Amino acid sequence: MTLNHRRRARTFTVALAAGALALAGCSSGGGSDPKESKEPEMTSQGITLGTPADSTGPAKELPGAQKGGTVTVLQRDAFEHLDPGQIYVSDELIMQTLYNRTLTNYRIDDKTGKVKLVGDLATDTGKSSDGGRTWTYTLKDGLKFEDGSPITSKDVRHAVERLYAPFQTNGPTYLQQWLSGDGQKYRKALPDGPYKGKHLPKTVLDTPDDKTVIFHFDQPRAEVPFAVAMPNIGAVPPEKDTKEKYDKAPVASGPYKIKDFKPGKGVQFVRNPHWDPGTDSIRHQYVDTYDVSFGHQWVDSTRRLQAAKGGDRNGMTFTNAVDPSQISTVLKDKEAMARSMTETQPYVDVVSINTDRVKNKKVREAIAWAFPSGQYLQQFGGPKAGEIGGGLVGPTLKGYNTSFDPFQKRKYPGGNAKKARELLKAAGEDGYELVYGYGNGDTHQDAAVVVERALERAGFTVQKKEIDQSTYYTQIGKVDNKYDLYRSSWGADWPSASTVVPPLYDGKNVYDDSANYSHLDVPWINKEIARVAKVSDLNRATAEWMKLSEKIFTKEVPAVPTFYNRLFTLWGPGLGGVKWNAVYGAVDPTAVFVK
Image: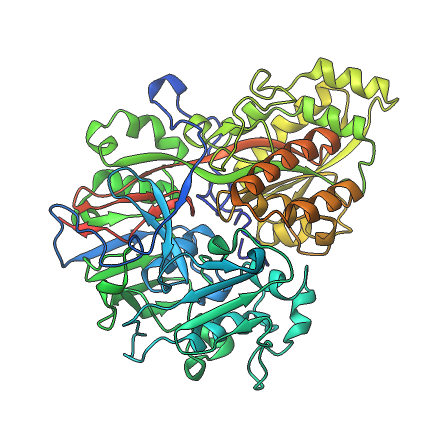
């Protein structure tokens, strides 16, 4: 994920990473028996649009909550970015909720976990006009940065316009593309960002006064309220914008500010005295300090949080999972299980098929029938790590079809070799050679053996090629890469397949570092994506995106779904207010308190 433009998986190192962090090495076969514990139901995550009243602070107090104390946060992966414009992986996405506010945001009910999209910097989720082509946001009164200066519309405009600058390469691009052009074309509208005194025209982005922000699009955009909840659509004071250096010391608008960031080691968040709880219906400011440290492999964080000694009594993690080798031990520990959660994440792991190289659809169908999704999942932790996937779009999205499984991955967790052999024979492709690229971590190596055996049983000849995990996404992201199959992972940015289908399967997105790893460029798909993008009714649009995802899978077979991610995680007994952020697929810190 910190790998250019998309909310993709951060692969690597040691295990199935949480949320936008994806899979990496852990001991094979460490999964629990599915009978040992009840997993979360794989149901669609409904998010309702809140009212202006829902957007009005302060957030409802938690029973028993008190102020004070330090929370220790154990993370495996170091935060690469603090600049909200550059953030697009789940650990950083959840981290930025402490100090960064956006036009809209997600309010999570502390008891039920239900999610509402509400106004954050804005008074509501936006007002549309001109058939959905114009969206107007009014800023709340009393908003301030950490230095006490007021937050105005010019700061929001600057936050948006700086995303056009060449150094902004990692964050989401929905709003920029909707305003100024698909792919990388939008950058031409403001090639230097706002740094040489130029701005987007008022016909695109208008700030007629200090409180008003108006976006003008060339076609209806039903999902603008969700797009402006992304971390890069917030407020950045122009006079404090240090461009690339802003990545190390951004100016806070939320309840916490950055005190001490040591790249590769850790970061401390302390209270922001200029944050006004009366303007914020989402966050609390119970804790004095969040002390985040990096480099904690899952074995380490699991052991420490289960034992909960010393400072670890007040410990948690945003995205570290229980290590697969320790799952059975934790399941037997009733005290630890009382402070655990197992939640479905918005991330879908697939094996992408390079359609530039594997042109025959029958061969792609044979791959889909042969792939051992269940055995593959077992290498990463079994049922506690995920559920076998039937389609390209996950169960947290609105309109998810629980019965959709055209290649019967749940019925044949080891693959259906017989069906695959029949397809290969009918295509005249017996012995078809596949080059399977995989990361060089232990778990991926074990998984590669499972994949190789299943595909060879189905009549394929398999050539395995290791890829250095530190450059994995760079290698598979090359349009002229020399692999036929390779794992990738993608998380929806909000619960609509609109954040999955276009970035992954639109022909406009076939370029180096794009998330279209299948290199799919099919006229009927491109036409359908353009059509559905213009649907102005949100409910109708989300249903159409889901139908299109299913049609793409069955008609083109650009990838094989392997599993829908889950996170099984622990926290210390000294903490209250721990809850789940279903949008980011991570543990939410915004209501945490020290008991």
